[in-house]
Amino acid sequence: MADQGGSQHGIARTSRVRTDEQRQRDLDRIAKYRDLEDQVRALTAKGEYTPAVFQLTSKLLRLNPEYYTIWNARRRCLISGSFSRPSAGSSCSRASSTTSPTATTAASSTSYSSSSSATTPPARSSPTAGKSGTTADPTSDTPETDESAAADTDTAATAAAEAETRDLSVLKTELAFTIPLLLDSPKCYWIWSYRLWLLQQAIARLRPAVARGVWEEELGLASKMLGKDRRNFHAWGYRRHVVAQLESAALRGRSMVEPEFAYTDKMIRTDLSNFSAWHSRSRLIPRLLDERGADAAARRAFLDNELQQIREALNVGPEDQSLWYYHQFLVLNLVAPDKHPAMTPDFTREDRVAYLTREIDEIKELVEDYDDVKLIYEALFEYTVYYCQLEERQPEPSERAGLVVWLGKLRELDPMRNGRWADLEREYNLKD
Image 1 (cartoon, rainbow, N blue to C red):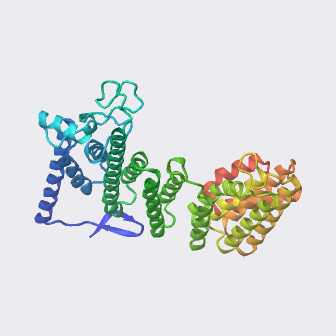
Image 2 (tube, rainbow, N blue to C red; image 1 turned 30 degrees about the vertical axis):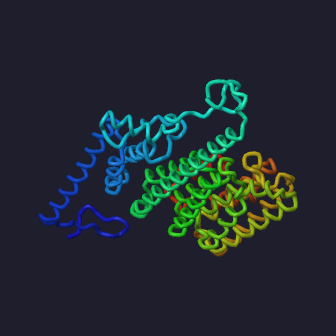
Image 3 (spheres, rainbow, N blue to C red; image 1 turned 180 degrees about the vertical axis):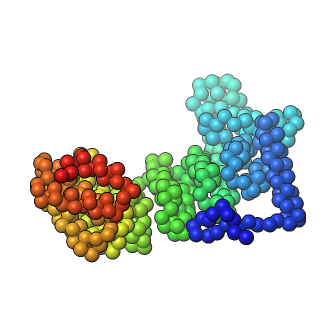
């Protein structure tokens, strides 16, 4: 029976009658969930972040990945035991695998303080350290001492390599743990927050070359996400963050502007309506031109190419707001270079006026084929105002007549925004 409460996206909601057996299954699931929650809360309240607690967080997060507190408990479990050492600045307590006070001390000293339990080898440069490690010894530079120092160095290197291998394994296992959760809840912020935390741990715990490999795999994941949903602005923002990290000194990175600009090309060719791709493109252009060392001629050619590309897109879909957004970005580079990263800083005012005149003429031609598209009239109105501002004058009679006509079309096509159109009428003194 249709639900009288209405429908969503044209699909009527229906009421679902559950059997007693189904209700009991739901009650059992709720009881299981609450039992897991109670266990985790009770143990973490006592400062226990053991492997057992870690397993409980796995079970609970599979049931409810939105539970941010449990993600934090999982972080503490990793820092307290799974990782080879606490990260710099970590305030999490070092938990043991048992609640016994005696066992806690033993486990902590075994897991985290093994180096302190061994005798620290004397420094070769110490003036009081001999073979005994306590008094000066004229034979302290003997081959035996050199061999001992070399052995200590090898041992330290081996321990560091083993620690890195362990940490890398933990990080990859944890990143893999979140994948099924993401497939079920792709827009759950807490899953993505946890992944970013893991990636930051890679920077803190691994050599730059190894950590970079982890981040590069994450960029591949971002590409797969956008392959499934090309317009997902969350995924685009995540991709920009990952790229910024890959470019950072912490990962010994270098600029990725060229490949990322090419990526926007690819995504735009696939879908002209991809607002996020156009947005990313607009953010990349200033850096792209600077890093290319583009001179005035190269910048002019680049602008010509971008304007031609967006004009062709507008001829296909003039009702697409994402296309007008990018066209406006290019126009604002012409009319307000002091407020926007200038693509063509060497342009004179005459250059800017000539370019803007051409764009207005091109848009007027669109009206002949698409006289019912509001965005065309908005662009004509705005760009004509920009044109007059560039020339530092009031609209001429013919321009004013055009503004009145376009404002009338905007009122006709979008009466819901009549207040805005009235404001524009007053602002530019268009009321007869």
